Amino acid sequence: MPFVIDASVTACWAFADEADSVAAQARERLAVEGAAAPALWWFEIRNCLLVNERRSRIQGDFTTAFLRLLGAMPIEIDHDPDEVALLSLARRHRLTVYDAAYLELARRRREPLATLDRALAAAAAAESVALIGTP
Image 1: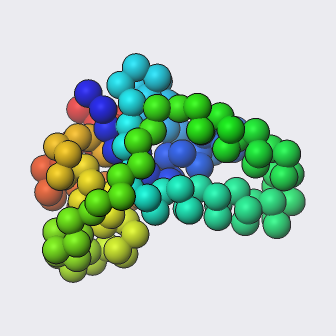
Image 2: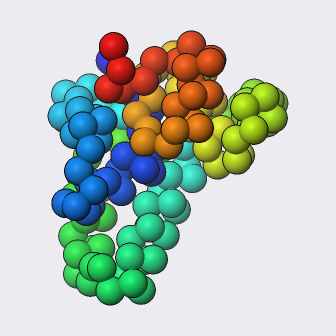
Image 3: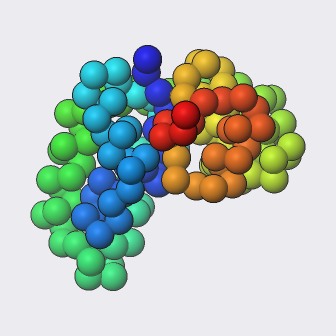
């Protein structure tokens, strides 16, 4: 079953010292099942990489290679959020609109969510949205 992936999981793939079992499970499933992300994900990943370049954690050539790798992965970008549902989720769970975008997509598509964000995971559980890495 396809799933929704957030930037926290994707960013984890870029940095070996941030290994996480949820991120590893998501990467394994991605190759077989594919994933989706809200349009925001595209910007979040690039910002994360650029911030880490500025901190001298990675170099520009790493960013280029990692983005090329991501571009080859079966990740569908969703451009049509349900604004009413998104704002409702953000309000109800005190999430940022950015985090609520991932939850809204997972709920709308009835797909599991892969996240390392505790508040987002708690909101997903409260909304009966399955989480990658939990039984």
